Amino acid sequence: LTDRLQVAMSKLKKKGTVKEEDVKEMMREIRLALLEADVNLQVVRGFTKRVGERSIGVEILESLNPTQQIVKIVDEELTKVLGSEAVELNKSPKIPTIVMMVGLQGAGKTTFVGKLSNFLKKNEKARPLLIAGDVYRPAAIDQLKVIGQQLDIPVFDMGTDTDPVEIVRRGLEQAKENKNDYVFIDTAGRLHIDEPLMDELKRIKEFAQPNEILLTVDAMTGQDAVTVAQSFNEQLDVTGVVLTKLDGDTRGGAALSIRAITGKPIKFIGTGEKLTDVEVFHPDRMSSRILGMGDMLTLIEKAQREYDEDQAEELARKMRENSFDFNDFIEQLDQVMGMGPLEDLIKMIPGMNNVPGLDQIKVDPKDVARKKAIVFSMTPKERENPDLLNPSRRRRIAAGSGNSVVEVNRMIKQFNESKKMMQQMSKGNMPPGMENMMG
Ligand code: GDP
Ligand code: MG
Image (cartoon, rainbow, N blue to C red; front, side):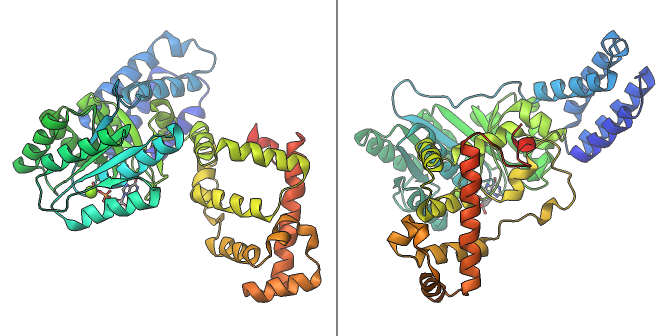
């Protein structure tokens, strides 16, 4: 979608003023771009009509910079189609807030339960309970349990032989006893929508009276995603949509259509398989992303979320006092690794998504593992006081971590350099080359 729109835009940018024919041609391009991206025909018609009307009017022809105006109009209209504003999770006035997941098999329900409960735990110190309501596949229950273990979040299950409504009843009882503030009900999906599935989901809904029914839709399924969303919504009157697998080069078309066709807000997006790959859906940012303008805010938020504030303060203090040591270094490495591939983060910087050679920037997990091994071969005293690392100690560390002395030296040198850089930054001096990125 992005490529095609960008071509359309750049054609326009080469011309000084915009005439009615230009707008028409541009609309044709946009129309094709949207259809190619699997956006529903009805949605495309409405969209191009509105953009066209606004573009042909005086607003454009008399404005000083017509091309920018059109880009702005397209951006605004895209944002509108996507829902205008971010919509928050519906919360119950008294605990627990009950969130029920629905969607086809493989859409990403179970993964999302992990993602959102982890998100809430980190951001609100929430204490969720996960209920394993997919009783058709033993593997589905295990999958949720593994996720619970990873996140240190309790999972309620009764195996595969109990009716899901009974499981939900008992799960809610447990949540009440333990004063859990959120309950997530993971449910079964099917490869295709069928009556028994819908009936079961209706029974669970009826019983649990969830505050939020989140329909999980796989963005990679294009037009199908819209059909699926439509029928789930008709049967269950969902309260929000989660669009998963919006990572990689997934076409953004589904996002545009689903909101327009169901009228239900997209609340979250899944951007990868990891449990931290989740974002609040912001229509304006999605629009910019579709238009290829990058997504600075999401980038910053992503970095912040991974970064506990206390830790940040502690780090700033250490940087000022120059007491940053190898223990902090390890913590830093883990933070960076937890943020997801560096190249994904860089692509979110405006203008960076098309930079050639970008795919060559990689944080090599092997390199990180080697650095960790070296630090782990240091004694606690050495980790706290890097100045102790004389040649004989370095030889010992090299042998202990299975590296050469050269590698150990290189790693210590890098450590000292980044320490120096951090100290400069903490004094307000950006190292050369960083100003542009931060500005
Ligand atoms: P469910 O059947 O609806 O519960 O779906 P699952 O949560 O089991 O997910 C199905 C598959 O999709 C798994 O392999 C997940 O790792 C993967 N998945 C889920 N969400 C995302 C996402 O946002 N991006 C990517 N790339 N994969 C995802
Ligand atoms: Mg599942």
